[in-house]
Length: 367
Ligand code: FES
Image (cartoon, helix red, strand yellow):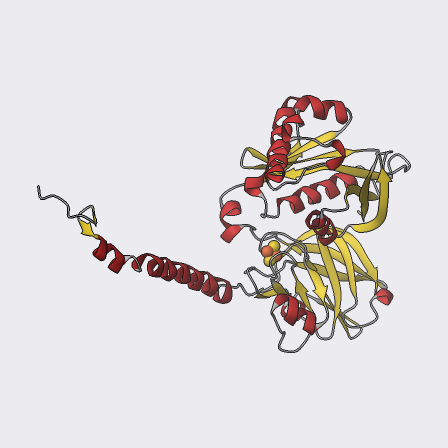
């Protein structure tokens, strides 16, 4: 076997290696640009048209008096079938909308069809151009998602016109009852997730956790707390809890009467929340007035898929089932992303409170 020459690497001379090294970054760049091109063409040309309305009938719900929507682009937020929705008065009729006495209305689910954040009405085309990098051809208001900047057209029956979302927003069926606007059905929610992969072949369930499943509840909380600790944050500063301290025994002590919930993908518990019937520390209200949400967490492997929205939807349904008027929660002031999730879902900020040495923001949602 011939001996390697000095300066050679496994049979290649240093000169040959130096002559070829450029192929690595060039190859990586070609692959990266190829992937970006593929992704861009998917989100640009792969958008689904809204098509003919396909409503699933539901329990009729009063949305607003027509007198509350006197001008074009007046809006009314409401929750239907556990989903945050928005009714709009529009300057022209749209398929799936309603026309009453020459005025046009439409309503859409606010759950973004990309990963489930809540969309808002953006009226100013300059804000759309600056923040969303989208300029509507007719300068009309659009529904924008603050998470990854998808844009949906209210005058296009909720069509996704820009950004990562591909499916249109589900439409709400509207009808007239006297002088009031009512919701009577809603289109099915499309599959959320990265390319629809997780939801396409995995089922999602929210359910009450059995007492014996307290360790599963604790495991989700610990995983979420651990991910935050790695980023130099804590889950709940008031408790100065380490992930390791979030044990089943701790939860049992802290919320002896709490109703614990699990969210499952297939059979894997990946999200949790605790619901309380009273919360005198933060909300000295009458019993039965509201349901109080605590310890909402999603396992870090499954964050960004809109699962916290699904847990909130389950909490809304439970509050309704119990006849409560509100769903309430508190969160520390300096968690802007978490607060954006709650505000995007429709919770209103009720102010701040100083409790046991820390500052919390109080939120409530009329259900
Ligand atoms: S664009 Fe709305 S969740 Fe990503």
